[in-house]
Length: 165
Image (cartoon, rainbow, N blue to C red):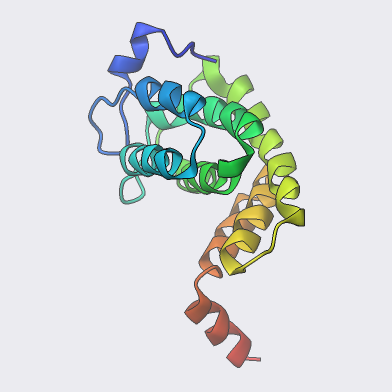
């Protein structure tokens, strides 16, 4: 895992295909204790690490850190999982995960299943159910299933599917 104080973060490319230093908001997220400020940072990360189906090295290097943060900051698990799920779903149409990150990245993906399961005791709306189930699917290597689950997160899509039966 690339240390958040490593200067290489400044060179990593984000979703807009320009350098984006994700270490700054990741460090900030580690020290946030309220949901409003955390959501603002996660929104920035979501915007910068993923853009119209594009992700890049900054996105991949952020994933293990995002998992570590979610394991500590339980109040933002769902928001972080949503970002990781998005990165993993679109990753297959982008550059591959670098060899030096592959082990940490894959371990982080395995860990999101446990994070998804930790949401079981929350009151589930359709969005939280989709995030939890998609995280579990990704942790088991079922990226296409996770993608299908996220598509069904839209109530209109789910209603259409149910009407066809």
